[in-house]
Structures are given as C-alpha cells and as structure tokens.
Amino acid sequence: MVREGVRPREFVSQFDPRHERVVPRADFYRGLAAAGLALTPIEMDTLMEVFSAPGRRRYVEYERFCETVGESLVQGGLERAPLLAPLQHVPARDTPLNYLNYEERALVAAALDKLSHFPDQLSNIMEVFKDADKERCGTIPRVSVERALCQRGLLARLSARERDLLYKCFGYRRGCGDEVDYRALCKALDVLHATSSAQPC
Image 1 (cartoon, rainbow, N blue to C red):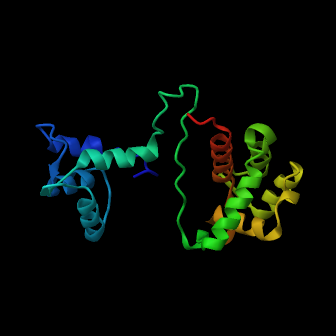
Image 2 (image 1 turned 120 degrees about the horizontal axis):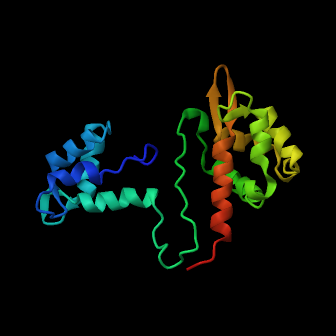
C-alpha cells in the first residue's frame, strides 16, 4: 500500500453510510480488494483480527487501519513545527538479493550514518551518478558507484565490507549483473540527513 500510494479510506468508507468508523468484515475485504490489494486469506484475517472493533468482533475499525497506513505516507505533528518539511517514507525493495541479517544491517546503518553527513545537497553526488547512468534507468554498476564516491572523497570513509553491504542493500538485478539503485541511496541519505539535523519539537 505504501509503495503504490494507495489510500484505503476512499475504498472502505463507502461501506460505512452511518459514519460509525467501523464496517463489517466482508465489506472491509471488499474495499481492500477494490483498492487492488492482493492479500492472502491469512493476511486478510490477520488484518481483520488486529483492527477488529472491541465488543463487535464481526466489525473492523477501518478508520484506525487507515490512520496506521497514513502514518507511512504523511508525517504527523507538523502543525507544531511548520518550518519542517515532511519526509516521504521510502519503502525497501525486498528481494532475496537485498536480504541482510542483523549484523549486516547494523554495518549498513553505520555506513549510511557516515555518508549522511554528505547528502546530495552538500556533495552533489547525484549529478555524478546521473553522468554514469547513460540509460537514465536509476541504477549503475558497482564500479561506477565507487568512482562517484571517490570523486566526492567519500570512498575512503567506508571500509570494503561496508561498501559491499551497502551495494547489497541497494542492489538491483539488471540483466545478468547486479547494479546499485543510486536514487534510493541518495534518497535514504537525504532522509537521514534531514532527520539527524531536524530540531525536536
């Protein structure tokens, strides 16, 4: 839902003519099916159990479900700090190629933290990535990523293991070889830079 930007309220609220903020389970299922979500029956049952209305087990609190999904699409609390820019949630591309265990995720987090001090606004690394991306497809080979990092003086900040895991995390299978999704990498660095430098409310 987050990756496609689907807002379930539009599809489920039509089954709530009295605005009770709950709908029967069958209508909840029908609304999510109309939204184009292909969920297995087990996943749908899990959703309905988690968001079931207290005291009315045959009904689902669709409003609470929509708010939970909306938290991924919209940053709340901006009325208290109107100068903060909202951040878009960046869902990961989950494939066996990108799988990282706990230790690897910690190393990637440390590498991203090092690089987040030099986001695109400061290092302008996106332009170097785009120059290497002749086909404008958003991915480039690892060699081109290393060349771009070296041009901006960022390659020496990462160990070889951190670089390998970073390439694995943002890896993308194109043809017969693995490439790196530099757009997702730059977006992640921008988000990390914005959240680390944002003033608390």
